[in-house]
Image 1 (cartoon, one colour):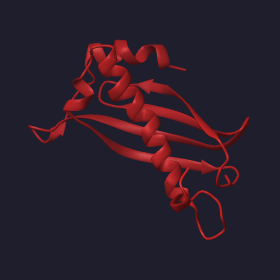
Image 2 (cartoon, rainbow, N blue to C red):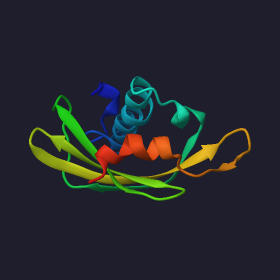
Image 3 (cartoon, helix red, strand yellow):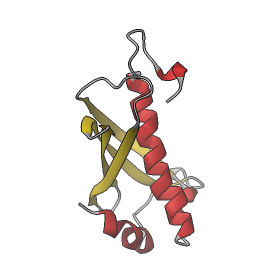
Image 4 (tube, rainbow, N blue to C red):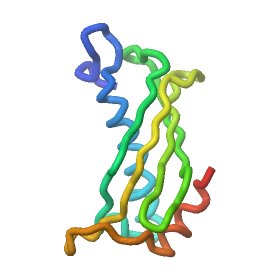
Length: 124
């Protein structure tokens, strides 16, 4: 956490939670995928929905960890679910709906079989 992540009350700002969830999702869909030889997510994926439940404030300096899994993989979208832990306590839960996107064509595309295969171990 950075000092700039705090709100006026000395807690981690709600927008920072979204950034932390994004970093966890990117670690899976870009870094881990690339390490597994899959780069198709880098060709385009957009977010169609975020929802976050804030269960308790997180103070500056508290170590946090995020656990993530896939709730579903549909033909044209996937839903990532997360929990953010402050120590051993769940401080927030979130979901993100991701849509694979063909940037060159400017339109959504289908989830590829290799993407589904890569993500399947995270189905929860």
